[in-house]
Structure formats: structure tokens, C-alpha cells
Amino acid sequence: MMNLVHWRLIVAVADAGAISRAAERVGMTQSGASQAIAQMEKTLGAKLFTRSRGGISVTAFGEPVVEHARSMLASLDAIHGLADEQEGLGSGRIRLGSFPSVISNQLPPLLATFRQRHPGIEVVALEGTDEEVEAWLASGAIDLGVVLNPTPDRQALILGRDAWVILTPTSHPLARRASTQGVDFTEIATQPFIHATGGCSVNGQSLARDAGWELTDIQVTVRDWASACALVREGMGIAIVPESVLPADRKGLRALPLAPSIDRRFGLVAPNSLATNRPLNTFWQHVAKATKQE
Image 1 (cartoon, rainbow, N blue to C red):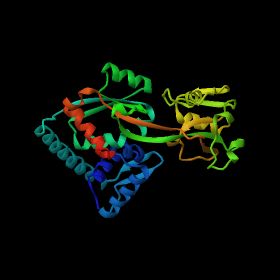
Image 2 (cartoon, one colour):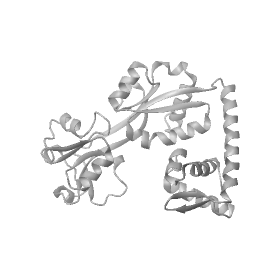
Image 3 (spheres, rainbow, N blue to C red):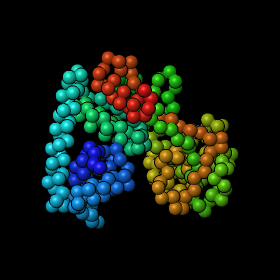
Image 4 (tube, one colour):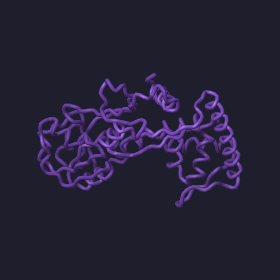
């Protein structure tokens, strides 16, 4: 059975020329998008796309299907726009600041579904470090911000949480340890270390300092989590990374929990003007519903 997400997906695939980018636009996983396309093609009885090393192309049958889908979705967006005007929303622009990993993982599905429901309200996502996001919030440069480990008084909507883990190459002595046995800072403080920040002030070094230790043998400092994982795989050192950024292919890598365990939470926070700003409040309610925090 085909639904609106399916129709949005085939238009996104036609525009992007790749399932991965299209899936991100509509808030689906790549495997889920591939299955949905196969289901649509089976239902319609013909191929919509052809796949090659160069990417994905629309078939002769798929071209008019995509255009009909595009027209249908444009009409639906226009109806949603009329509904927003009736509710007094109309158009608007929301500036949302966040650090890189959340922009890549948590935000795309939320933004995609909000855009579908409220096409007249534009959400602009700005990428920065957690310190920059806090400064933007304080100065009023952004309307909403995603912050790390928000305190209860900020009444944040929690978008997700994960645990920090020790990442080692499989050749490392710690890699022979049982996965249920954690690693504490006394065991890694003098180890060759890949310092990954992820664009945040909370990172492996800051966690070690909070526990009363200093990581003394830092081989290299990188911002990107993927780069840190690659350097660990090459045997340059170990790293402390959030569990959610571990690569799908962990060949050559071993992840072990910290002992005691340390989690991080990321939450959406709003300024005091939330109640008087209709577009902002609409987006807030959308996120609350999507994350079941109403």
C-alpha cells in the first residue's frame, strides 16, 4: 500500500539521484527507502528507477509518475498552507542551532515531517559547537537550540541520549576484554589517544578531567567522529566517542563501555518568547509529539 511518504520519497530520489540522500530528506533510513521503492514498483508493475554505478536514473515509465507525484504533493502543500493561514500561522522562519551529530542524525526526520505539514514555515538549521549554540541562544541570534545535558530548569525536549564508549583497534590489549567489563580512566590516561571533539566542549578529555585524570599522550585532535574512528582503526591510538556515532562497519574496531558509565543527553531548548511566537510554538509542539513528550 502506498502512502504520502512513498510519493515524497520517489520525488526526492528523482531530484537527488541517490537513495541515501533522498531517504534523509524524507526522514527514512536508507534500507527502509529501498524497501519502499521496491514495494511501489511491485504495486505499479513496472520499474521507476534504474540503478548503476553512477547513481539512480528515472525510467521512461517513472518520469510521468514522478511528475504526477510532484503535482499532487504541491497541491497538498498548498492545502496545508491554507490551513496554516486559517490558524493564523501563515509563513515564518525559525533559526535552529545545533552541533554536527544531531544535525546529521536526529534533526532530519523531524524537519522533514514538519516541512510536509507546514510548508510555509521555514526552519534554518545552523551548525556550531555546543558553546556557540549557547552563545547564539543568549544573544537571540537563534530561536531554538540543541544543547548538551540540559539542566531541568531549561525544560528541554530530549531528542536523544547515548553512552560514551572506549574505541580501540582489535589489536589493542583492551580489545580482548569481555564487552560487559568496563574500562576506567586509570587504564587509559597514558595510552596513545585520538582526541575527538565532535564540535563539543564535552569530549573524551573533558570527561577524563571531570574524573580527575588527564589524557597525556594525545596523538592528534580531530573534530569529526568518523575521522577519529578511522584513525583508531589504523592503530594510531584509542578514542572516547558517543555510542551513536560508531560506524556501521566495525571491522578492526572494538567498543567497550566506560566504568562507571557516562551518558550524554541532547535537548531542544527555547527562549521565553515561545508562547507568543506561533510558528515557533507550532514547531515545538511538533517535536514534543514526535518525541512523545507532550
